[in-house]
Length: 504
Ligand SMILES: [Ca+2]
Ligand SMILES: [Ca+2]
Ligand SMILES: [Ca+2]
Ligand SMILES: [Ca+2]
Image 1 (cartoon, rainbow, N blue to C red):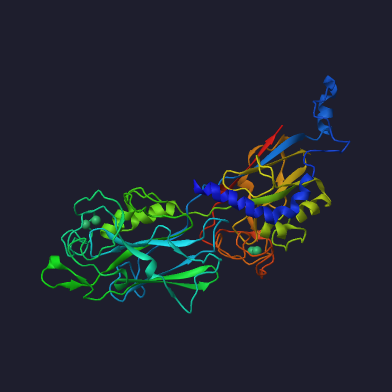
Image 2 (cartoon, rainbow, N blue to C red):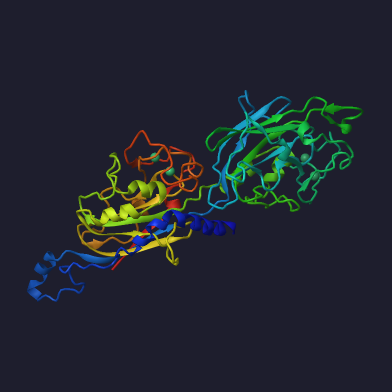
C-alpha cells in the first residue's frame, strides 16, 4: 500500500527536525541508582512480624509503557457533497446559469512526499445514460510543484482539467433517449440496458452515439480560488444554454440545455479516488464503491458515492517522540490545566515534535523520581515519529505514591499533544500496580502557544511549515483540552493512539 511508502518518506523528513535531539538519546531509562531502593524479592518475615513488615514496605514494580499509533490510514483527506445550487434552499441539479460552491481545506501535502493535494469530483452529464464529468485520475493539483497554491487575480479557471467520462454501466442511447435521466421518472434508478463495460473518456463527441455532444467547456465551468491560507473555494457552474445539445431522439432539430447533477468531491493525494480508466466502475479506485459512480453517472444520485467516500476519509496523524516522568503524587511536571505553558520545552514538543528541551528540563525538576524521552520507534535504529502501526516503548521502576506523566505531539496540529491529566496517572491503586490499556486516561491538549489551523492542512503545522516555531501566537495562552468541536476532522483519541502498561 502506498501509505507505507509515504510514512517512510515522512520519517526521513522528520529526521531533519529531530536531528538536534539525537545526542540526548542516552538518557537512562531503567537504571535506578538510588541505593535505598527496595529489593524486589518478597520479605521473608517471621510469622508474627509479617503484617508489620508489609505495612512499612511501599509497593514497587517494574513498568513498561507502550505508546502505539493505531490510526487506520484512509486515502481521502477531506470529502463532501455539492447539491444545493447557490441561492437555492434545497438540493437540485444545476440548470443554465446555476452554480454549486463549496470550500475545501488543503495544505501543499498531508504527509511529506505524498505527491501533493488534489481535488477530484464526480457529477452527472444529465443528458445521457451514464456520462459524468470528473478530472483525470490524478485530480486537479491544488499546488504547484514548488509548493505555491493555485492562485490568480480571483478564481482560476480549471475547466480544461475537467473531462467527460462514460461509466460503462448503461448502454448509450441517442440524446433524448427514453432511459436517460430527463426522460426517466424522477426517482427511477438503474433504468436502461446494462452495458457491462469499463470507464472510458469520451473523446469523440461527434460520432460515438450517433449524435453530437457539446464540448466540456460548453456545459461546465469549474474555478478554484484561494480564499485563505490552505483553503480553496470551488465553483461548478452550468454554462450550457437551451440550445447546447441536440436531442435527436426527441425528433427534428430539437435542442436542449445540459443539466449537471449534484456530486461528490474529495481532496486526496494518491491518484484515482473514484474510478480507474479502463476498469469497471464497480469497486474501483481508492474508495472502491460498489455502485457509487454508477448511481451518479446514471441517475444523479449521490448517497452511495458519498457514504463510501466518507468511509474512506480520515486524518492520518503521526505521533512525535515524547517525554515522560515518574513523579510524586501532587506534582504536575509537564503543565497545569488552564495555565500558560511553563516554558520548559513543552512548546517545542507540541509545535515541532522536538523533545530535547523538555527531556532536559525534566531531569532537573523537583519531585521527579525518574524521567526520559522516547524517540526511537520499536524496531527502528534512529529517532523519528511513528505513523500508523508504529510504537514507542520505555521502562522504569516505581513505587506506590508516584504518578506517570507523558507527552507526545499530535503531529497534524500547530501545538497539540496527548497526555494524561496534569497530575499524571497513578501507577498504583490499593497497592496494586497499574496495568493494561490506559488510553481512556489520555487527553488531547492544546499547548496554547500557537494559533490552530485546520488539522492536516495548516501551513504553520510541523509537516508543512517552512521552519521550526512557524505560526502565530495564540491569544489564549493557556494549556487546555481540545474539545473536538474546534474542527470537523479531529479523530477520537482511541482512533489515533493506544497507551498500555505492563507491570511486574
Ligand atoms: Ca454508457
Ligand atoms: Ca438510465
Ligand atoms: Ca493552539
Ligand atoms: Ca508551527
